[in-house]
Length: 297
Image 1 (tube, rainbow, N blue to C red):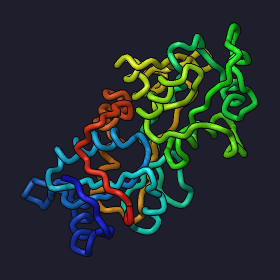
Image 2: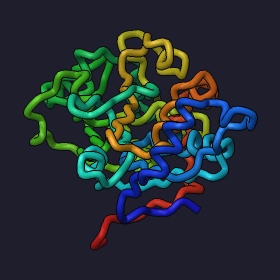
Image 3: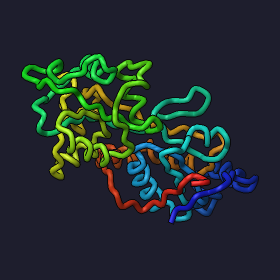
């Protein structure tokens, strides 16, 4: 069972020497023909919906390297990049590059715009979305023909998730903290709120949205700029609302953390991501990973 590390465990001199020898002699000592087996652990910190993708990738990695452990600290109030900067973690999973830390985009996640199934709207433009979530457009009758003279109910996501920031950046929203809206944390809470309000609109990670529709939730995924929200349109970049999933690395990250990044970027890792529709889309409630609360909670 993965566990929380209270203190980062950085490789000692012997570990660094072993890693150097592995780099110089990738096939082991002459005559042995076998590389030294990777051992150790890595701590990954995050707070967004991509936890399920990273979890699945970590499970595959550990299966290939049975003497390694990928540990997680995943919490809505976690500050991943700060943990990396303070040497409290090996990897921060976030939604943007950091100029002062090694940052790599490892996958893409679509952001689905969702409404109540009973709402007749089927598509929306980026310009309309910007006006809706800035409060400039307040009634559905302003969005589409024959729209009801009913006020739009905005459902926002929490500030510390890796989905609200790229959504608002994409729409060019600024000075919007005073907008009147219901704020929810999790995808399933968003679907429940949408189900309970015919005039509501919100945004969620693409996979959970597609799964919710498949499971019979009363939600509609809106076309954005005439592009259908689907796995393929996210992966090929034609769907405009998508966000990067970024690994921000500690410069002193453990050998296991560096090897895990290499695996995620490898053809095998990327195939696993694509096979699971970026893996980001499999929002399972029963997780094999234990997630730990912050101190004092």
